[in-house]
Length: 265
Image (cartoon, rainbow, N blue to C red; front, side, top):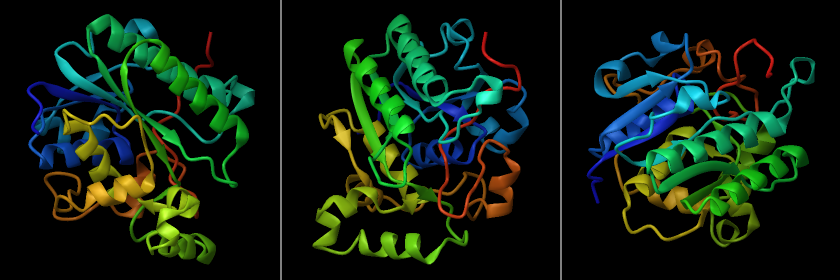
């Protein structure tokens, strides 16, 4: 069902945020993007096809009014990697950003928030999982209609990955393994992930509280591929790396972008 109002995506100017925006546009949604100040030039063709503005999700004042007149907010910001030297703990990077966005939703009258959380896989930091679960709980306590996406590791199509993760991706989509815990944690393509998120965002009657990888894989097949709009193909690995917001590792594609070089107050 096509939403009557726009959908706001945090993390504009990042590989994942922009692919989710493109997938939404392909479904006919009105899309707004929040980009970190100073990264506007990374939005590319999306500057012409979305409404966009700048905000720092770690600065509540910069978020005031940004979500008004939207039907939902998709929060993509966070990091798998802490930086203690700069005072950037996993709690700060993942919980505080989600808390501030949830508060923005409440203040601006947006009832629905879609949070990119994480599946509890053996190779994921316990502190990262804890921060994501705290964010999930906070959103629920705020009374928002929450769609929690417990995502596996993501990979950029065409990017070289270790055999172990490639095997997991293959086994994770084959029944009966796809119906098991493996189906939840097997790494998946960032493109398919973005299409699944877009389907969830536009579904006015979605009443499922938690979505896992197998849900996203099923939903992603409903529509055609939706690469970055205005282009005939997806971003290459080199282009994704040039966005700077992702440290693309051999085995994963972390969410969102990190704060500026200024440490938190």
